[in-house]
Length: 235
Image (cartoon, rainbow, N blue to C red):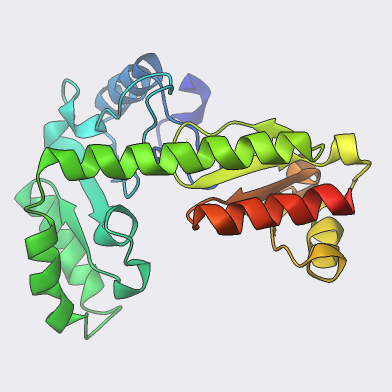
């Protein structure tokens, strides 16, 4: 990780839980990133929109980078209501950090968007007052759906990479004889009426993720079961 830092490092972008892989950075990894940010006097911008979707069998609970030594004064923490309250299209989010950094964010934003979903912001204010039981129930419900889909995909022959966070699961199509995720995903709707996303579109080098495809499990249980049934029949 140290090799990623150098004399020209000014800003570090960190996404945990990570989308699209579902990786949750470990406490040791976060501590190393924080120490390097301090050593190189770098600003950290953290994307934590899945902060409440870290599953109980992950490598550890969600740890905001800003809470680590030396990071409070150099971190901009970004989150969103879209994932936590299942209203992705509302596009209501926030940035937290020291006044100078948040001021820089607001100056940039005013040249990117002129109008946000003003009428929806009071609704999000109400949602943010939800008790801790809401967040635990939200996580547990999605974890159950993850387990349901992972079991079904494994039974259908996919190599399943169990996600530790977010609401996506990545699979390997190699056991099914697949060699190109893009072509595999393009064929799925006609083949069995199921849609997936080829992971290679997220890589600078498409060959790196060519045999990986991802599925979303933020669906009703009966929809997940139907998708699995169709995939099993197809393969």
